[in-house]
Length: 117
Image (tube, one colour):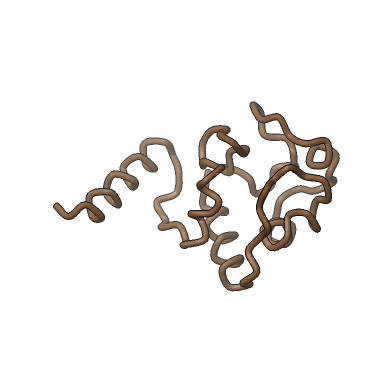
């Protein structure tokens, strides 16, 4: 089996085993995956179930004061704004990421994040 095909199959099996999305992530996900996982805290908080969750509230992660006090419940609009420019959306947050400038890529990423449970 070719390595890329094997990797794709293995990732799908692992995602199913952890109740995660079987939808292929957009290319922009690679930037997120450097610090975030879908299921558990890593360098950044877990992103599974982010939709409908209050900002700064995932258990097991030490959020910045700015994120904990942000009056945001993640939905399409708020997450798109944050992914586009994290420092403008939540000034003072600790995420060292400049943002995704392309609106189409932001939309793909938000759509993918909605599938993570």
